[in-house]
Image 1 (cartoon, rainbow, N blue to C red):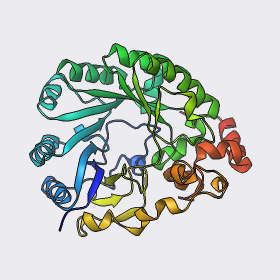
Image 2 (image 1 turned 30 degrees about the horizontal axis):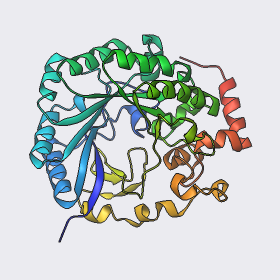
Image 3 (image 1 turned 120 degrees about the horizontal axis):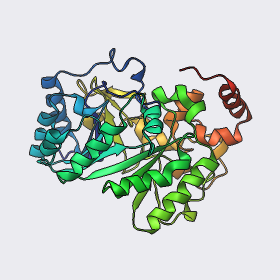
Length: 353
Protein backbone atom coordinates (compact mmCIF):
# COMPACT_ATOMS: atom_id res chain seq x y z
CA UNK A 1 0.00 0.00 0.00
CA UNK A 2 1.40 3.38 -0.97
CA UNK A 3 1.94 6.08 1.62
CA UNK A 4 -0.29 9.17 1.55
CA UNK A 5 1.60 12.20 0.24
CA UNK A 6 1.44 15.47 2.14
CA UNK A 7 3.20 18.82 1.76
CA UNK A 8 4.94 19.29 5.08
CA UNK A 9 5.32 18.34 8.73
CA UNK A 10 6.39 20.96 11.28
CA UNK A 11 8.19 19.10 14.06
CA UNK A 12 8.12 21.02 17.35
CA UNK A 13 11.30 19.53 18.79
CA UNK A 14 10.88 21.14 22.19
CA UNK A 15 8.53 23.44 24.06
CA UNK A 16 11.47 25.35 25.57
CA UNK A 17 12.68 28.66 24.14
CA UNK A 18 15.34 31.14 25.19
CA UNK A 19 13.00 33.99 24.29
CA UNK A 20 9.52 35.01 25.45
CA UNK A 21 8.02 36.61 22.37
CA UNK A 22 4.76 38.44 22.94
CA UNK A 23 3.57 37.25 19.51
CA UNK A 24 4.31 33.55 20.16
CA UNK A 25 1.53 31.21 19.05
CA UNK A 26 2.73 28.33 21.25
CA UNK A 27 -0.10 27.75 23.74
CA UNK A 28 2.43 26.62 26.36
CA UNK A 29 4.57 29.77 26.36
CA UNK A 30 3.17 31.07 29.68
CA UNK A 31 5.47 28.76 31.69
CA UNK A 32 8.04 28.37 28.87
CA UNK A 33 6.88 24.83 28.24
CA UNK A 34 7.85 23.46 31.65
CA UNK A 35 4.60 21.51 31.97
CA UNK A 36 4.64 20.35 28.35
CA UNK A 37 8.32 19.42 28.18
CA UNK A 38 9.59 17.37 25.25
CA UNK A 39 10.06 13.78 24.17
CA UNK A 40 13.28 12.04 25.14
CA UNK A 41 15.81 11.73 22.36
CA UNK A 42 15.27 8.06 21.53
CA UNK A 43 11.48 8.45 21.48
CA UNK A 44 11.65 11.60 19.35
CA UNK A 45 13.97 10.06 16.77
CA UNK A 46 11.87 6.90 16.58
CA UNK A 47 8.69 8.93 16.14
CA UNK A 48 10.17 11.03 13.33
CA UNK A 49 11.45 7.87 11.62
CA UNK A 50 7.99 6.29 11.82
CA UNK A 51 6.28 9.49 10.63
CA UNK A 52 8.44 9.48 7.50
CA UNK A 53 7.67 5.79 6.99
CA UNK A 54 3.92 6.35 7.23
CA UNK A 55 3.50 9.58 5.24
CA UNK A 56 5.46 10.85 2.24
CA UNK A 57 6.17 14.43 3.32
CA UNK A 58 7.74 16.79 0.80
CA UNK A 59 9.69 18.46 3.58
CA UNK A 60 9.86 18.90 7.34
CA UNK A 61 10.16 22.17 9.24
CA UNK A 62 12.18 21.89 12.45
CA UNK A 63 10.77 24.30 14.98
CA UNK A 64 9.78 24.56 18.63
CA UNK A 65 10.13 26.39 20.99
CA UNK A 66 13.66 26.97 19.82
CA UNK A 67 15.08 23.96 17.92
CA UNK A 68 18.68 24.93 18.68
CA UNK A 69 17.88 24.49 22.38
CA UNK A 70 17.87 20.70 21.84
CA UNK A 71 21.23 19.00 22.27
CA UNK A 72 20.20 16.26 19.81
CA UNK A 73 19.24 18.65 16.98
CA UNK A 74 22.06 17.36 14.80
CA UNK A 75 20.88 13.77 15.30
CA UNK A 76 17.50 14.87 13.98
CA UNK A 77 19.23 16.53 11.02
CA UNK A 78 21.22 13.33 10.41
CA UNK A 79 17.98 11.35 10.31
CA UNK A 80 16.29 13.77 7.90
CA UNK A 81 19.31 13.84 5.61
CA UNK A 82 19.48 10.04 5.59
CA UNK A 83 15.79 9.83 4.71
CA UNK A 84 16.18 12.34 1.88
CA UNK A 85 13.35 14.60 3.05
CA UNK A 86 13.61 18.36 2.51
CA UNK A 87 14.60 20.37 5.58
CA UNK A 88 13.60 23.84 6.73
CA UNK A 89 14.10 25.37 10.16
CA UNK A 90 12.54 28.16 12.19
CA UNK A 91 14.85 29.73 14.78
CA UNK A 92 15.21 33.03 16.58
CA UNK A 93 18.90 32.97 15.63
CA UNK A 94 20.15 34.07 19.04
CA UNK A 95 21.76 30.69 19.85
CA UNK A 96 23.69 30.51 16.56
CA UNK A 97 27.42 31.01 16.91
CA UNK A 98 30.17 30.42 14.38
CA UNK A 99 30.64 26.77 15.37
CA UNK A 100 26.92 25.95 15.09
CA UNK A 101 26.69 27.79 11.76
CA UNK A 102 29.58 25.71 10.43
CA UNK A 103 27.87 22.49 11.48
CA UNK A 104 24.52 23.55 10.05
CA UNK A 105 26.23 24.29 6.73
CA UNK A 106 26.98 20.55 6.39
CA UNK A 107 23.27 19.75 5.94
CA UNK A 108 20.97 20.31 2.93
CA UNK A 109 18.81 22.84 4.76
CA UNK A 110 16.66 24.79 2.32
CA UNK A 111 16.66 27.78 4.68
CA UNK A 112 16.57 28.83 8.31
CA UNK A 113 13.89 31.42 9.00
CA UNK A 114 14.85 34.10 11.52
CA UNK A 115 12.68 36.97 12.72
CA UNK A 116 13.69 40.60 13.08
CA UNK A 117 11.05 42.96 14.46
CA UNK A 118 12.85 46.28 14.45
CA UNK A 119 16.00 47.96 13.22
CA UNK A 120 16.71 49.24 16.71
CA UNK A 121 17.39 46.82 19.54
CA UNK A 122 14.77 48.42 21.79
CA UNK A 123 11.87 47.65 19.46
CA UNK A 124 13.03 44.13 18.58
CA UNK A 125 13.74 43.31 22.22
CA UNK A 126 10.35 44.65 23.30
CA UNK A 127 8.75 42.06 21.00
CA UNK A 128 10.91 39.09 22.03
CA UNK A 129 11.07 39.67 25.77
CA UNK A 130 14.75 40.12 26.48
CA UNK A 131 18.05 41.48 25.24
CA UNK A 132 18.43 39.34 22.09
CA UNK A 133 18.83 41.82 19.23
CA UNK A 134 22.62 41.72 18.96
CA UNK A 135 22.72 37.92 19.23
CA UNK A 136 20.12 37.56 16.49
CA UNK A 137 22.03 39.87 14.14
CA UNK A 138 25.23 37.97 14.93
CA UNK A 139 23.48 34.64 14.30
CA UNK A 140 22.27 35.76 10.88
CA UNK A 141 25.76 36.96 10.04
CA UNK A 142 27.35 33.65 11.08
CA UNK A 143 24.92 31.61 8.99
CA UNK A 144 25.46 33.72 5.90
CA UNK A 145 29.27 33.57 6.27
CA UNK A 146 29.02 29.79 6.19
CA UNK A 147 26.68 29.79 3.20
CA UNK A 148 23.51 28.79 5.04
CA UNK A 149 20.42 30.28 3.41
CA UNK A 150 18.48 32.57 5.72
CA UNK A 151 14.86 33.56 5.13
CA UNK A 152 13.91 36.67 7.05
CA UNK A 153 10.64 37.14 8.87
CA UNK A 154 8.88 40.24 10.21
CA UNK A 155 5.94 39.75 12.54
CA UNK A 156 3.93 42.82 11.58
CA UNK A 157 2.36 44.27 14.71
CA UNK A 158 0.67 47.47 15.78
CA UNK A 159 4.02 48.54 17.24
CA UNK A 160 6.38 47.94 14.32
CA UNK A 161 4.21 48.25 11.17
CA UNK A 162 5.69 51.68 10.49
CA UNK A 163 9.22 50.23 10.45
CA UNK A 164 8.64 47.39 7.99
CA UNK A 165 10.44 49.16 5.14
CA UNK A 166 13.49 49.82 7.31
CA UNK A 167 13.49 46.21 8.58
CA UNK A 168 13.40 44.88 5.02
CA UNK A 169 16.34 47.13 4.17
CA UNK A 170 18.25 45.80 7.18
CA UNK A 171 17.63 42.24 6.02
CA UNK A 172 19.01 43.17 2.59
CA UNK A 173 22.13 44.58 4.27
CA UNK A 174 22.50 41.21 6.03
CA UNK A 175 22.37 39.41 2.65
CA UNK A 176 18.82 38.16 3.28
CA UNK A 177 16.57 38.86 0.32
CA UNK A 178 13.73 36.39 0.89
CA UNK A 179 11.44 37.64 3.67
CA UNK A 180 8.11 36.54 5.12
CA UNK A 181 5.72 39.20 6.40
CA UNK A 182 3.91 37.31 9.13
CA UNK A 183 0.96 39.50 9.99
CA UNK A 184 0.46 39.18 13.78
CA UNK A 185 -2.14 36.53 14.51
CA UNK A 186 -3.21 36.31 18.18
CA UNK A 187 -3.28 32.53 18.55
CA UNK A 188 -2.07 30.66 21.63
CA UNK A 189 0.05 32.73 24.02
CA UNK A 190 -0.22 35.74 21.66
CA UNK A 191 -3.96 36.05 22.43
CA UNK A 192 -3.06 37.78 25.70
CA UNK A 193 -1.35 40.53 23.68
CA UNK A 194 -4.08 41.12 21.11
CA UNK A 195 -4.78 44.70 22.24
CA UNK A 196 -1.12 45.71 22.22
CA UNK A 197 -0.08 44.03 18.97
CA UNK A 198 -3.03 43.46 16.62
CA UNK A 199 -2.38 45.70 13.59
CA UNK A 200 -5.21 47.60 11.94
CA UNK A 201 -6.05 47.57 8.25
CA UNK A 202 -4.18 50.86 7.93
CA UNK A 203 -1.11 49.42 9.66
CA UNK A 204 -1.00 46.47 7.27
CA UNK A 205 -1.61 48.60 4.18
CA UNK A 206 1.30 50.85 5.18
CA UNK A 207 3.55 47.82 5.70
CA UNK A 208 2.50 46.32 2.37
CA UNK A 209 3.24 49.55 0.54
CA UNK A 210 6.82 49.38 1.80
CA UNK A 211 7.02 45.68 0.93
CA UNK A 212 5.72 46.36 -2.59
CA UNK A 213 8.51 48.89 -3.19
CA UNK A 214 11.17 46.37 -2.14
CA UNK A 215 9.46 43.58 -4.06
CA UNK A 216 9.45 45.67 -7.22
CA UNK A 217 13.20 46.15 -6.72
CA UNK A 218 13.79 42.39 -6.61
CA UNK A 219 13.23 41.31 -3.02
CA UNK A 220 11.23 38.09 -2.61
CA UNK A 221 8.43 38.92 -0.14
CA UNK A 222 5.54 36.72 0.90
CA UNK A 223 2.71 37.44 3.33
CA UNK A 224 2.49 34.14 5.18
CA UNK A 225 -0.42 34.77 7.56
CA UNK A 226 -3.87 35.19 5.97
CA UNK A 227 -4.82 38.73 5.01
CA UNK A 228 -8.43 38.31 3.85
CA UNK A 229 -9.23 40.12 0.58
CA UNK A 230 -12.22 41.84 2.21
CA UNK A 231 -9.70 43.86 4.23
CA UNK A 232 -6.83 44.28 1.76
CA UNK A 233 -6.96 44.06 -2.03
CA UNK A 234 -4.12 41.71 -2.93
CA UNK A 235 -3.95 42.94 -6.52
CA UNK A 236 -2.73 46.33 -5.28
CA UNK A 237 0.60 44.67 -4.39
CA UNK A 238 1.68 42.69 -7.49
CA UNK A 239 5.24 42.17 -6.23
CA UNK A 240 4.15 40.62 -2.93
CA UNK A 241 2.94 37.01 -2.73
CA UNK A 242 -0.03 36.33 -0.46
CA UNK A 243 -0.58 33.08 1.38
CA UNK A 244 -3.82 31.77 2.83
CA UNK A 245 -4.80 29.26 5.49
CA UNK A 246 -3.62 25.96 3.96
CA UNK A 247 -5.55 23.53 6.21
CA UNK A 248 -7.40 21.04 4.05
CA UNK A 249 -5.41 21.95 0.93
CA UNK A 250 -2.37 20.43 -0.77
CA UNK A 251 -0.19 23.08 0.92
CA UNK A 252 -1.08 22.08 4.50
CA UNK A 253 1.73 21.79 7.02
CA UNK A 254 0.74 19.52 9.90
CA UNK A 255 2.30 20.06 13.33
CA UNK A 256 3.86 17.27 15.37
CA UNK A 257 3.89 18.65 18.92
CA UNK A 258 6.52 18.25 21.63
CA UNK A 259 4.50 15.45 23.29
CA UNK A 260 3.87 13.58 20.04
CA UNK A 261 0.43 15.05 19.35
CA UNK A 262 -0.55 15.85 15.75
CA UNK A 263 -2.39 19.11 15.04
CA UNK A 264 -3.70 20.76 11.87
CA UNK A 265 -0.99 23.45 12.02
CA UNK A 266 1.41 25.02 14.50
CA UNK A 267 -1.14 27.70 15.50
CA UNK A 268 -4.07 25.39 16.20
CA UNK A 269 -4.34 23.83 19.66
CA UNK A 270 -6.92 21.18 18.72
CA UNK A 271 -5.29 17.74 18.65
CA UNK A 272 -6.05 15.35 15.79
CA UNK A 273 -4.57 12.42 17.69
CA UNK A 274 -1.50 10.99 19.41
CA UNK A 275 1.09 10.09 16.79
CA UNK A 276 2.86 7.85 19.30
CA UNK A 277 -0.05 5.42 19.29
CA UNK A 278 -1.87 6.12 16.00
CA UNK A 279 -0.45 6.04 12.48
CA UNK A 280 0.08 9.44 10.88
CA UNK A 281 -1.39 7.96 7.72
CA UNK A 282 -4.69 7.77 9.60
CA UNK A 283 -4.37 11.12 11.40
CA UNK A 284 -3.64 13.22 8.30
CA UNK A 285 -6.97 12.02 6.86
CA UNK A 286 -8.99 12.87 9.97
CA UNK A 287 -12.50 14.27 9.38
CA UNK A 288 -11.46 17.50 11.12
CA UNK A 289 -8.95 18.09 8.34
CA UNK A 290 -11.10 16.98 5.42
CA UNK A 291 -14.06 19.11 6.53
CA UNK A 292 -12.17 22.16 7.77
CA UNK A 293 -13.00 24.36 4.79
CA UNK A 294 -16.68 23.36 4.69
CA UNK A 295 -17.56 25.79 7.49
CA UNK A 296 -16.90 29.52 7.23
CA UNK A 297 -17.94 32.45 9.45
CA UNK A 298 -21.44 33.83 8.97
CA UNK A 299 -19.94 37.19 8.01
CA UNK A 300 -18.26 35.51 5.03
CA UNK A 301 -21.44 33.95 3.58
CA UNK A 302 -21.89 36.47 0.70
CA UNK A 303 -18.19 36.50 -0.24
CA UNK A 304 -17.11 34.63 -3.39
CA UNK A 305 -13.70 34.00 -1.76
CA UNK A 306 -15.05 32.33 1.39
CA UNK A 307 -13.99 28.76 0.58
CA UNK A 308 -10.49 29.94 -0.35
CA UNK A 309 -10.09 32.45 2.49
CA UNK A 310 -12.16 30.64 5.20
CA UNK A 311 -12.37 33.89 7.17
CA UNK A 312 -8.64 34.19 7.89
CA UNK A 313 -6.90 32.46 10.81
CA UNK A 314 -9.21 30.09 12.62
CA UNK A 315 -6.63 29.49 15.35
CA UNK A 316 -6.72 33.18 16.27
CA UNK A 317 -10.53 33.13 16.20
CA UNK A 318 -10.48 30.20 18.63
CA UNK A 319 -7.95 31.82 20.99
CA UNK A 320 -9.50 35.30 21.09
CA UNK A 321 -13.19 34.83 20.31
CA UNK A 322 -13.71 31.22 21.41
CA UNK A 323 -14.82 29.93 18.00
CA UNK A 324 -12.37 28.00 15.82
CA UNK A 325 -14.54 28.58 12.77
CA UNK A 326 -15.25 32.20 13.61
CA UNK A 327 -13.93 35.37 12.06
CA UNK A 328 -10.24 36.23 12.30
CA UNK A 329 -9.75 39.03 14.90
CA UNK A 330 -7.83 40.98 12.25
CA UNK A 331 -11.11 41.27 10.33
CA UNK A 332 -13.40 41.31 13.38
CA UNK A 333 -11.79 44.48 14.81
CA UNK A 334 -13.29 46.41 11.86
CA UNK A 335 -16.74 44.77 11.59
CA UNK A 336 -17.60 43.50 15.09
CA UNK A 337 -18.60 46.46 17.28
CA UNK A 338 -18.37 44.48 20.53
CA UNK A 339 -14.86 43.24 19.77
CA UNK A 340 -13.73 46.69 18.63
CA UNK A 341 -15.02 48.16 21.90
CA UNK A 342 -13.18 45.46 23.85
CA UNK A 343 -9.94 46.43 22.11
CA UNK A 344 -10.49 50.12 22.85
CA UNK A 345 -11.08 49.41 26.54
CA UNK A 346 -7.99 47.22 26.77
CA UNK A 347 -5.84 49.82 25.04
CA UNK A 348 -7.02 52.49 27.46
CA UNK A 349 -5.75 50.55 30.46
CA UNK A 350 -2.34 51.45 31.91
CA UNK A 351 0.52 49.26 30.78
CA UNK A 352 2.49 47.59 33.58
CA UNK A 353 6.05 46.38 33.04
